Each structure stands twice: as structure tokens, then as C-alpha cells.
Amino acid sequence: MVSQLLRIGTLVGGGDAVRVIPQIAKHGFESYQLTFWQTTGGIDLVETAKRAKAIAEENGAIVSSLSVFGNPLTGTGDNADTLASWERLIDHAHLFGADLVTGFTGRLTDRPIDESIPKFKEVFGELVRRAADKGVRIAFENCDMGGTWTRGDWNIAHNPTAWELMFDAVPADNIGLEWEPCHQMVSLIDPLPQLRKWVGKVFHVHGKDATIAWDIVKENGIHGPKEFVWHRTPGFGDTNWTDLITILRQAGYRGTIDIEGWHDPVYRDELEMTGQVHALNYLKRCRGGDFVPNPV
Image (cartoon, rainbow, N blue to C red):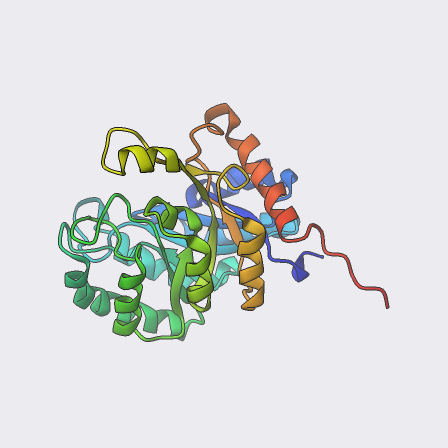
């Protein structure tokens, strides 16, 4: 009885969803986040919604959310359509059976995070109102995309100090986080205490972990030539996902955990789906396995 569970699913490219979901549904994914890079392009969202929703439901799954990853604050170059894509996904989310649209905040290129807040307020203040009118929530992935507090080009939502600024600038109930432990671990932040503090603003969770090589950190620091952290598929990293799911459930979380693959340094290429299906089954065990009704 999946309705009693915290669903475990995966990310699928929005343009490939109709082709890919039937191929992987047999493995037991319970939800699908449909993603777009910088633009929804020429995708017919009405037709895609009709077909993707039907295919998911045929397999007992749902479309959990829609995403566009780009820089809606600058709107330059390849990001010229990103803001309009946010609007399209907000307007069409209900056709997918979803009420959540996610992505990056964007930022003013190579400027400190605090200098991006006025533009963030202008752009997402309007998007949040648009979303609220349609019963849609907005959430931001906590990925730094190689940026820091002072420089970067994609996203300001990778640090809790930035979250404070963002949610003060746009104080709405339907704006929150698309959180995962990996991106915080890359910054050497302990993810579980952070989740416990911020769980009320977590609308969606990405199933992605990390492995930190503390021996390398202690000997070489984080600015030397040696890698000290790797993105991992859940089940192969350092995070205690049983504790993570406990924190979510204690807070009444009703979203999904969707696995973000294509990052693991070992379970990649021909081992990609091997890793993802391992993560799927691992996360199902961490939530307690299959739902078992109580005796009457």
C-alpha cells in the first residue's frame, strides 16, 4: 500500500519521460521527478503530462515534481528561456498530478550571494504568487554548482545563511527547499542536524549521498590536488538514511525521495541502473520495507 509510505523514486529527463519510464518501471520506482535543463524547449507539456502521468499510474507510481535547472535571474545566453520555463511548469503542473516545481534560484554572475537577493525577491516573489494561485509549491535544490558565497553563476540556495536571506525576502508558505545530504557534505556540513533544523522548509528530497575522505582532508586540506569528497548513490555513501527518514517522518514529511543518479564514480556507465536499483531497494529498507497493515 504505497499511499502509506514515503515514496522512493528517481529523476527522469522531461523530454525522455515517455520513453524511459516504461523501461525502468519494472524495478519498482514509486515516483518520478521530470527534469529540464535551462528550458522546456519545444516540449508539448500538455501531451507529455497526459502520457507521463498515465504511464506512471499504470505502474502504481506518480509524477512527484517538475524541475528546470538554469539561471532565471540573468536570463542571458542559454538561460534566456529559463524564467519562462518556470512559468510554464507552474501553469502545467496540475496536468502531471504534481504540485511542486523546483530548480536553481539563479544568481547575479560572480557577485556575492547577498547582492543577488533583491533580484531573487523580484523574480521569485512574482513566481511564488503565480504558483500559490495554482496550488503549486516552489523549492530550490541546495547545489552550489561550483559556486561560493562570493562567486558563481547558478544558484544561491546552497548555504543555510542564504536560505535565511531568501525566505526573509520572500516570506511565503509555498516556497522551500529541494534538499539532499550530498551537497551539504561537499561543504563539510553535517547534514542530519541541518535537516532536523530545516525540515519544515523541505518540500522534496533528492536521493544522493556523498563519501568524505577525512584522511585526505586531515592531511591535505580541501584546496590541494587530491579529491576529498565524492557524490554517491544512496547505499554507497556516508549518510545514515534510516536516521534521515526518521527525521522526515517525525516532522510529518509527505513528499518523496527521488534518486538523483549519474554522479557516482563507481556505479556509472554500464553500472548506472545497477546502482540506482540498489539505491531504490536500500532506501525502501531504510523506510522500514513494504507497508504492513496492523491487525484489526
